[in-house]
Each structure stands twice: as structure tokens, then as C-alpha cells.
Length: 193
Image 1 (cartoon, rainbow, N blue to C red):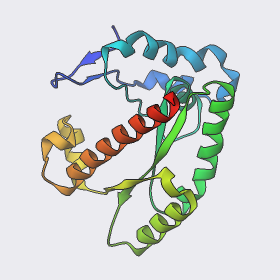
Image 2: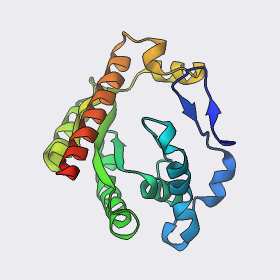
Image 3: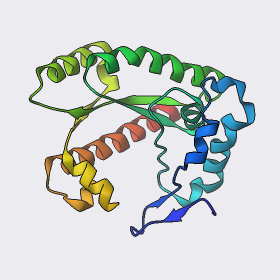
Image 4: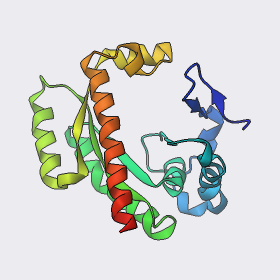
């Protein structure tokens, strides 16, 4: 409870990351046994208090991301529809599979979220099609646009959907949340069957 912080939104509590976590973010996560399970133990202790526990990770494949996957039921990978991001997905897939086979057999890769989309860029349209062809149903239907409204919401420490609920970016986030909930329920149904 000492780590959990209240927010001004009654249904949202957070555990903020701090700079001190940097020293734990080792490039080879498999060498650090007890650290792999610390986050999972914390989530197990607090999970009954929440409908959902979301873990946001740094954009790398190191120990903090590994520990998050060890603690998770599902993972979602945001990807910008561009060349380097698309090429990097093979490494993300291998990383997730390594966690599944060694530490968390219940982890499910829920999908890829195409984000920071700029409709005016032809390359973004091309790479969205490339990723949908390559990964099929793993790519979520909802795409998230690049929009200044996200930076505004961060500076105000307010969810974008509350800050300006009627703009396209907020509608995309609401649609994404609905799709994630639907996919998690579908996967839970399949798992129970």
C-alpha cells in the first residue's frame, strides 16, 4: 500500500515509476531470478482490489519489461506503422515466447496496437497493410492517431478521454479500451472451454 498512490479520479490508482528503477533494468533479464518475480508477487497481493491492473513498460526488451510479462495475463504491443518498428516485431515476438516458455505459460499476446498514425503519410498506410497481412488477427482493429491532445492530457495529468472526450484521439482510446476488454473476455472464454 505504500507504493500505491491515489489520483483525483476515484477509480484510478497508480504506482509511479521512479528513476531508481533504471538500475534494475538489466539487458539480460534471465540472469536476475528474484527480480523477475517481484512485480508478479506485488500484483498478486493487490489484484483483488481492482478490476484491471495495467502495466506500462519502457520501450525495450530488458528486465522491467520481462518482469511485467511474468506478472501479466495479456500483453499488447504498440507499434508505429514504419519500417524499423515493423522489423522489430520479430524480436518482440521472440521475447514474449521466451517469457511464455520459461516463466509464465499463461501469458497471452493479445495483439498489436498500431499507434501514432498520421493519415497523411502514405508510408503509414502501407505499413498498416503490411502488418495486417503479416500478423492477421493479432493486429487490433483500432488505430491510435498521433495527436497533440495526448501531450495536453499528460501535462494536465488527466485521461485524454476526460480531458476532451469528443475529439478523434479520445474516441480512438475509448474504442481501443472496448476492443481490449472484448478480446480479454473472448480469450478467457476460450481458456475456460
